Length: 99
Ligand SMILES: [Ca+2]
Ligand SMILES: [Ca+2]
Image: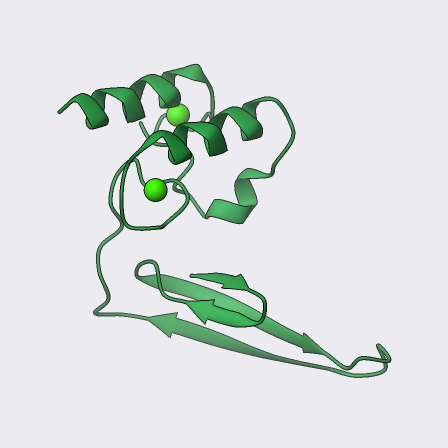
């Protein structure tokens, strides 16, 4: 799930906590959303747009260089599932793209 400009978009099964904060910051409300029955996450689709392409490599490079946070992409940035986000994940995305 990702949120852009206040719009919640389903990108796969899982759960997320959504917190809304009043404009003056004085009050908050949260809710837990569980998504089931949605599309399974596509391996290598780091940015969750439904395709595996160079945009996913750009996201990985930004994470590796410290310009973006892996937490923005759920567990999708660890493409090869080894617990680290590094150049091996970039290689995994390239291999997926090459088929
Ligand atoms: Ca993608
Ligand atoms: Ca990895």
